[in-house]
Amino acid sequence: MRTVIPVENKDTLAAVRGFLKRLLETGVVEALLVPMETPGGTVTPALVTDPSLLDAANPLAPVMGLNAARLAGRVSIREPRGRIGVVLRPCELRALVELVKLQQASLADLVTIGVDCLGTYDVAVYTRMQNEARVDVQALLGTAKSGDLAPQDGYAFRDACQMCEKPQFEGANVALELFGADLAAGIPVSLPDEIAEKLGLTEASPSPSPSPSPPSPPQAGGRGEVVGKVVAARTQVRDARFAEIRQRLEKEGIEGIFAACVRCHNCMTVCPICYCKTCLFKSQVFDHEPILYMSWARRKGAYRLPADTMLFHLTRLNHMVLSCVGCGMCTSDCPAELPVGQVFRAIGQEVQKTFEYVPGASVEEPLPLVTFHEDEWTGVGEE
Amino acid sequence: MAEGSFEPKIVAFLCNWCTYTGADLAGTSRIQYPPNVRIIRLMCSGSVDPTYVLKPLLDGADGVLIGGCHPGDCHYQSGNYKARRRYVALREILKNAGYDEDRVWLRWISASEGQRFAETITQMTESLKQKGPNPLRREWAV
Image 1 (spheres, rainbow over the protein chains, first blue to last red):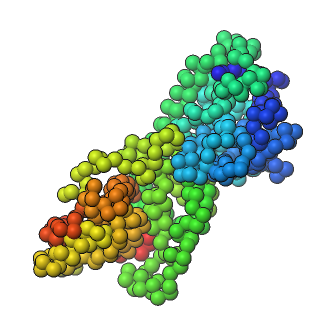
Image 2 (cartoon, rainbow over the protein chains, first blue to last red; image 1 turned 30 degrees about the vertical axis):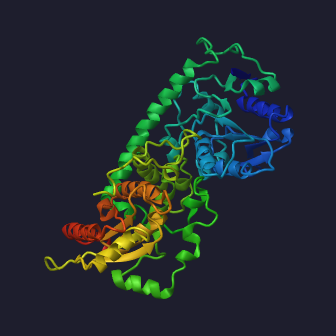
Image 3 (cartoon, rainbow over the protein chains, first blue to last red; image 1 turned 180 degrees about the horizontal axis):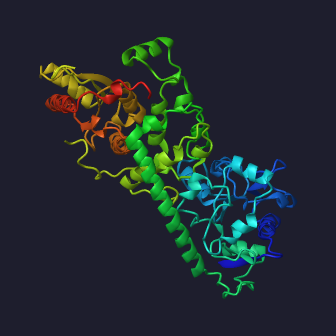
């Protein structure tokens, strides 16, 4: 059912905190995985059992330091476990869907709480904004009503956010539906009837809106329109970025784009999909003998070190690009500022098309490389 | 390089039960085929990780062949079906990354198809001769 969380004193964040507290207090969940403000001025995920500590919860802070899908996986993957509410952005939820299919997470005791995403800044940018005392979250929340999303003057959202055409997630248990809403007055929420009952919420009449336009009903036809507008704008940016990166691939080659890669493996470490405890590339397989280096260097005349850089990226593409949800953590955390996420998304788009697969869309739809049909690609191999 | 003197190097990953045995049959039947292939035996085409194909390509091999049992005949039931999907994904990735995906071939060759194995190597050698050497041969910054 749909209802509205009332907002007092235009303090949207306080209303969200109150809602989250009620989830704990009424026993809907035993713990919440939610971004929490830290003394250092940023936010970090934490597993919270004490409702009073939720005064520091801030899922609306426009910053994403890491993709919490993997964390949701760790706290849910096997029994015994708690009943946990995970407050996640759409790209984190999509990654969680993929992780469930990769057997790295379980939805059995999770309550997914999705929040529409208006855009995020890189951690370094956000910290700088905090220091310059200029993070205006209310202003950003204000853009949710019209869908005219924009970063603050002088700052830019993460690249991945600028080209994200999926700023909302269908299929969360509880959804905070920010788009199309006057968040200073109320937060539309969609949630299962059982949870609504426990929280004492009813199918609400629209809360009085201070704006002159007629209050939008909880079933926001308004939301659909606003989401459509954001998606259209972001899709344009996405397509422009894809065209750019494809041009670069054409001009400098993929080796050119990754020329400055130092093999720190950050991209792999922060990728929510790359869950292997020991990546092949960090294993002994790639502890080459000195004499091998000599023979490779002799064969080509020179040999880039550390070795196997393109092999790493191409292998990672083959292993995970079908599940790439475009969260952009890879780009955000690359010390050489390589456009990892743009390359992976651009190549991923074509591979996903080939398999008609949309990562993060459905828990039921099997992963393309884990399933097969006998009568597909029947021409392949028979030439 | 003088015209016509380029001899492509093909690295082949052949499944033990079908293609490798088929290649062996080509040998015992004294079927002549170009000597350009270097064979690596695996138990199943389904055990080919894309990395096995990418490494020789990046090191400068002109072509990589994956050989397996015909669909339906896999010794391990479904390994070749998975290999087929991985191959399709790998080709799409190579193409989009700017490489010539046609340097990677997948062929179903059974244990009795010695002639087919010889023909495949002949065709692949010819195709690679047309394409010329893999540009990655001299590319040291990979």
